[in-house]
Image (cartoon, rainbow, N blue to C red; front, side, top):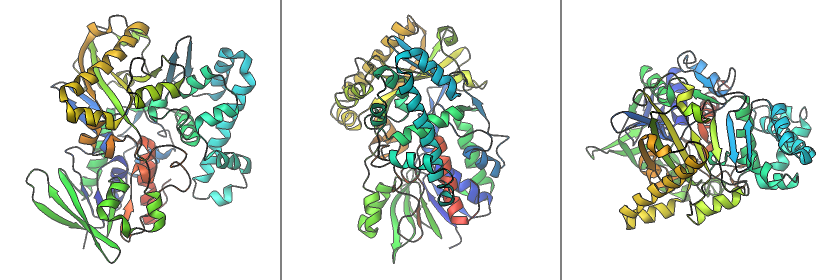
Length: 509
């Protein structure tokens, strides 16, 4: 057995682990069921002239000395894979009837803007932001390798973070008695989590909110370049990525995983792959049931009993004969809601399937790069994202495919109506291309169970200090996935690098 690491799946955390391992001289084989690497990070062609990235719109932790930068430096890719900053004065533009707030990098400037909007609630806004700061500092201690030594140096912050581990964002809002409008403006990037404030882990929200405040970024050459650079590093260092290969079975003997049996999706030929260690980028719960859940320890069975994150509705569009910059778009995302109660807005869309007044995100990545190879000359990409219930769309597609397609068109029409009323009059006239994706699209093209976007749901019940990590309780098997680490671009970079660090003892982060 001369293969060091057999990696099942080519999601971003797996690519990071595989690239670091191959670069260090280990022999790596990666199996991917899709024809593209990257999981939700992959880029796919649409029509003859368009390329879109699956969901990813902006990222964090890419600055000098931060996680993504450290990994890229280790791989000697930091000069090749670079990132462009969103507008520091407002990387997220929050919009709702009667109110608007641009979220800046500078926290004191954010406070000043909140005070101007809510002069009768200055103390409440200040206390809430202070709790966010202290929780962020405490979480950094709790997640660090030297946390026991640093706890007493940062005792107050650590206690604050620990006390908030089981809190939802809504509970902390209520604790500080923030007015509903302030809550909405601060939480309006909820499509990043696909959870409303009354379900979302406060600590998960803090990590992302403060992470973006340190710097929000978009890849200089799009996400495709990031993914391809990692994949190329694996192959250039003797590794192999085998595409269109579906894992059918894990080979287990005496409580040790030896490898997998897989089939070529083109030829249906079966093959056996073995290695000293198997790295599972496949969803851990799905893999565990494929192996046999009874083979895992009781502790692991409890950790594997997580709920999947909600899924999303995406609209990929391009416009022509218009400059979106003239209508308030630029180096930022826009988050819009017609309903100031985000919990009610989520419930309407996710549980009642009512999109008559959707809350959604708008992304215009073309303002952050000079590389316009993703669309025809003279056009601009604009994308829309909101939440969607997997079971509803799955059942609709299975029972009536025409109704399924009509439903997707109807949701986009509702979003466009709001865009025309609030941002771009006659927006439909400028559309050169439009396509939509539902949770079943995610499941079909990203191989994610129930179309989930982030692995396990980021509720306090699953996003805590006792959540699943890389350890599987079986010898030779390690998890490397959003559910066994952290979701999102920066989170999966951290997950892959952390696993490499744990298995090799080499310090990167």
